[in-house]
Image 1 (cartoon, helix red, strand yellow):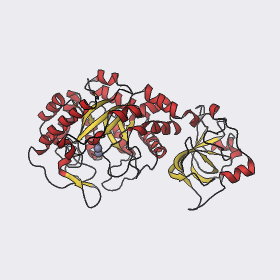
Image 2: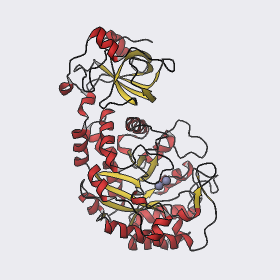
Image 3: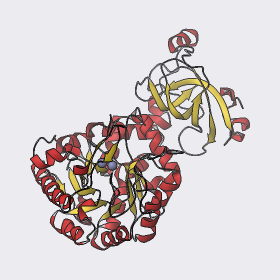
Image 4: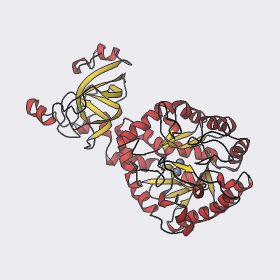
Length: 463
Ligand SMILES: [Zn+2]
Ligand SMILES: [Zn+2]
């Protein structure tokens, strides 16, 4: 069905709710970008980024299936029409939109149309929807709800050589302070000594660790992390009171481990790590099929979570550690969800309709298993998946569609991603908050996504 701008606000446009429609218009974004997956569509070309109509019927919010070129003038789009009444924002949305213009198409340019028809009035201050975004609004969100990165190797702590040397780290506190990040879950990489990037460009284990090797490495890595936190003057969050006291401008850290390989199949190592190294966030598996269960990137061997893995989940519940099921297979996550008495975290991934073989992405079903424990799925920022922060915001919106607004967070995997990141440092955090506001989340929702949801899980898990 083809819609025209004069249909907006009429029974015809409202009755199209849920239908696949076509609409032509001019894209506009809060910031000048050449490509975006999330923008508004206008009947006429805007004269500047902030120049948007005040009328809720004057623009259509677009969430594209992929990033689209916005610098070529008018776009002819097809997508799922959504009617939103009494939201205070734009009335209509186009979901999963794709361009109907042929590749290389260059439509009417803005300049051309301005010459023909003249610009709209600048009404940025009083228009609804995306005009709420902007640097001040983003900063206000980060100040109101402490932002938490659910998975980070900030400082470069994923490097085994750096951890062993105890030197060569990059600053953590200063970028956290300037970007407004309150809490980083800093993860040592338990199986770091035994994996590498293989010929396929992906990380695989390449040898079996010697007995004692990974517990010895973890002792070095945890001690190194505590030294670094001290040097950076990071406040370590070890209990609920610590989480409640977290604030932007006062950088804090939660000691985390990516992979429970350091346990080497024994529970006593967990109590030691909890008491001696302040470990409060444990990811069960990483790049090695370990004693706890199966991983997404290698062939399954255990059929999911092992009995020992289930024991570790129960011990985390008892001791007060957040259980993170990132990298685990869906059967692992399902059994962990059945065993745990506390919400689960899946700290860094993104949604895919049909993840490829050995992919680290997850399905909506997988996300829902975590959400149903009351937990949180952290969305990560590989540039190969999200080329821009608005595209990442759209990816977060898709995860919210799958898991719910109370069950999505941010997992940057800072300094841990193979390949470029669209969130390469914490200075970019306000721009992500801005993109989320621009994607239609209000300030409260954006606060939940960037930290409030993780804080809730931490408080439920850690006394
Ligand atoms: Zn990871
Ligand atoms: Zn990582």
